Length: 123
Image 1 (tube, rainbow, N blue to C red):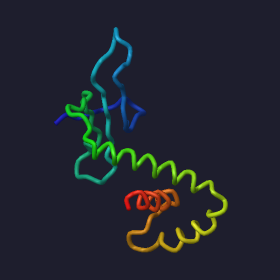
Image 2 (image 1 turned 60 degrees about the vertical axis):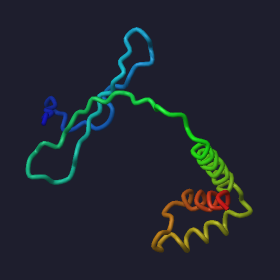
Image 3 (image 1 turned 135 degrees about the horizontal axis):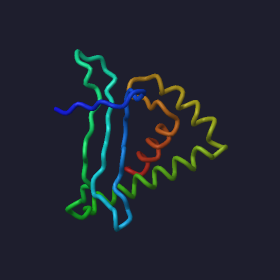
């Protein structure tokens, strides 16, 4: 396994260090990704580098998948609109506050509204 040692003053790096270029002449199809683990371990090897290449989908989306994507987009749009609707905002906030501490309750207001709108579209 490889070990990454950074220059003095740099403790860790996390995220994409380089991405594939979209220009034609100097483009590369790979991405250099760094991760830093903060969990306590016995050894000090918590930095890792990965070289990832772009993966293209080999099949076309099925009609069911396209239907799910459409439903997701409609629910997201409806949830955003419902967040701005002043006539239902107070009742929605009260209902959200009642359920957020329960098991399986949505922890954010947007997630709560999205779930309501998605369930409406499913039925």
